[in-house]
Length: 173
Image 1 (cartoon, rainbow, N blue to C red):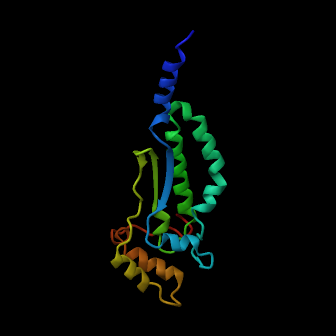
Image 2 (image 1 turned 90 degrees about the vertical axis):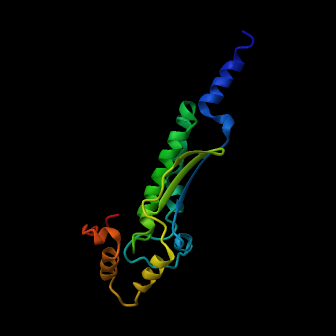
Image 3 (image 1 turned 135 degrees about the vertical axis):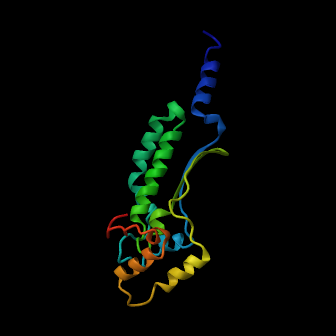
């Protein structure tokens, strides 16, 4: 039957959002010093985590995420699967990031866009540190200060510590 393909193709374009731009996902670790910590292989992280905390999880899991996006492309253009992939990458990066003060491990900011439209944008769990907070953090880096004491000082100088919440156990994210 001539002329039946065009309406079907239009419906497919609408369903997959293919005509509205590229589907892009990103995760930003939203701290001033995040790039420095990510790239420096020579830094020591005695409380856990380490460098390349975005890169390593991405390379380990991208195949599964791409397959999920491809499998769901006809349903919604892969948008939901991309959202889950970026949330997963954010969670994995938070586990792999340096833990010393807890800023990087809670600073993942996943986003998904389709062309110029925001599909998904979750704010980081931890706010971007201000200049005053960064200066205070530098004061806590005294040489020879035990890591456990640094963590105790940090915890009791944050809002959660001042509210009387117990600090997380060592090794918990």
